[in-house]
Image 1 (cartoon, chains in turn cyan, green, purple, orange):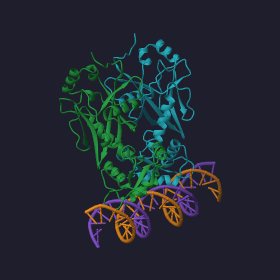
Image 2 (cartoon, each protein chain N blue to C red):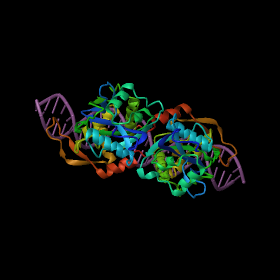
Image 3 (cartoon, rainbow over the protein chains, first blue to last red):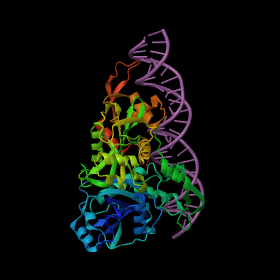
Length: 247
Length: 247
DNA sequence: ACAAAAGTGTTATGTCTACACCCATGG
DNA sequence: CCATGGGTGTAGACATAACACTTTTGT
């Protein structure tokens, strides 16, 4: 018998999480390996009957990387009828393990893409019967992914880069107290380009989502930079309303 | 017997279209009345097995208002487990008509929201066994909607207002040839505020998505305004990449 | 000829970019 | 004491907002 059947989940809909991890100026994506194959997949899952999509996504994050209260953003829906043809070795694996009814994997799927941003060193990964390995892969080195997961990742990145111009970014990515240069390197990593140090400060400060603290980062070479923290209220406000009200 | 069963569609997922209509400086939404009730609904439907969400949305637009090639944008997914409790009078109606299996309407639904923008005078509406009336309602006068359709409409409007600051707007809304004042009143209607005539022209021209024609609108009172048309290539380009690359 | 609407121009203000300069710190 | 990175200031380019003036047309 199988543990989970069509009775417990909403059939034909899955959630896939593009978990971006940032650390030491590298933007990476979290992928799971299907045991016994060389195929990699985004952590995903089904939506239990009494949960919203956001809750389903939060559950996956909690299960897989042990983190709660991470900002998750729905960015697209993937509904191409051709998208859900799993490779035979995956179906074999499902059958062998027998947690899910194989029919669940064989029918057509619509997947809702969510993305999260976090510091990947904060994370403890948890594996399961399907995956005996996981890895963080640099965003431009993703390969051997199942189904359309590569496309999902690309779309997530594109969305992230667009969003960064009118939405605050960084809450789960930076330590509670951080410096302006750290913030900047986050932006540079996401955007994939260098920014002017001085103009960055001004612009970021103008957004009014940071509190400048009376402390400096200690023990670093050269001049000690000031520490900042997020201004919770203004950050949330900005998440709702965005920055660039062009009209 | 019923015409359409769970076999033909993807269960538990529906598509709801927020069709914004613009005409004579009014922004309206297209709603259908459920026959014999005072309840109104967004035109929506299920996703047939071999179609994408966008195709499902396009089918609904074609069926209901007879238009093809309308720009449809997916803007959110509505997945609250409590959202799908239909009013008893609706279930009665479904049973009476018997096109769909009632169980389809009783199970939990996730709905994908799409929005479209068009000139509502271009439209011939088509009714069916469920709806014997339809109407265009001013955006701030929507009431007696089923389920969470009011929330869906509000979210669509919010998205539209956000998008308008970094995306071109107007392709399906204005006649093929239109004047700058017409374009402006479209913007003013969507945004719900007045804009400066002269600054609007400059800014709009700077976007470089319009071709100024050598003709003027004739037969109007006062000075005849120049006609413009969309520059297809640049418009599409702008749809992809947006305007405000703030970083 | 005049009111109303459209087109063009100007000026003040604000924002962005690209720097120059100064400050603090570890080696 | 100097190389390196951080903080502040500023001039020029560019964009935006507010408003004056001219042009066109139906009545």
